[in-house]
Length: 141
Length: 308
Image 1 (cartoon, one colour):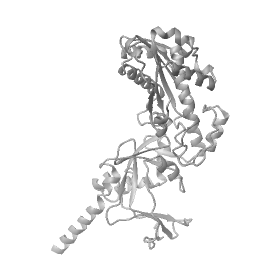
Image 2 (cartoon, one colour; image 1 turned 60 degrees about the horizontal axis):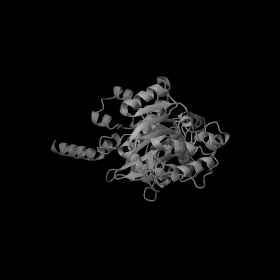
Image 3 (tube, chains in turn red, cyan; image 1 turned 180 degrees about the vertical axis):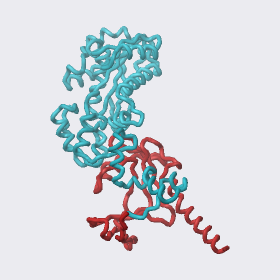
């Protein structure tokens, strides 16, 4: 087993000034890293009825909804500007934009509270409770 | 023919209809069914029904409605005018299946093929006529699939109605020709004035007939291919022409219900994508080496990361 000693730096100092991004979590893997005409194709054709949004992507029907980041949290979009040639070199990842909500999409299934990404948002609150509990636990020792 | 209900939302299926002539509610009627635009990779498929009293069959024949495919666009428009003039005894209804409806149905998780979609649409239109009080006694249907099975299916669904399913029925029965004209006129008009919901600016409307082998259609499909999104909703994504072009000129998109061979899929999953951080299958090995992750985390596809 090789020992990886490289460091990854995450530069997030500019969170305050960063641009807000519209974020979509798609139910498919798109083998593409780069710009896409999201507003022309996706936003322009998205339909909103009450709490359910519908759109088609590549001819398939998607249903989705907006999801807020947990309170006190900010979503970050990070970009690696210069990818290092080997895993021995240090890496720098920069903040490219921020978001406080995202739209997640299911393939044909209406969005509901059992969706993985909705449930995942439970964790920060639970994590807070767990650390409070541990604090209490340690102070009692 | 007022197409505005479809034009306000051309991503869904839409029914348009004429007034029901009073005489059709009191006299025994015949009804013809035909479709327009089954083959093209562009635009909607339109199903049409036309009905009139059996006693008026001769009059309809004399108005020289013929198979719409043998007519020019102008001739069809003129014949539609004639049908409209005969509205005291001829009624019609259309179901416009938008290209988006066709794509999402055919590419659904549980596939809904074009034949099933066609049959259901035709059945829906006959039911509409019956529900509107039309005294149906005879139904004539044009078909591309096996006629016998379809005829049995329709006869069982509509007892008391004599159903005739024939290939090329539009050239045999004037009432089917009339239905064919209504459907074709609607499709022509919709395709000509297609309102692109996508924000594409001025779109070149020189897309030809929409048939995959038309050089103009081919050129248009090449011009309007977006590497990520593929096409605007005007295109039927389920057509092999569109799929082949997206595969060769667009970026690859993989869905969890894709049918691909296991090795390829496994290889692909080793290339970490954004989604792999949410995928349950990733991290099985790490888990074995370290500790058992609680179900709370696996259910939510949460994983602790030590590298980016």
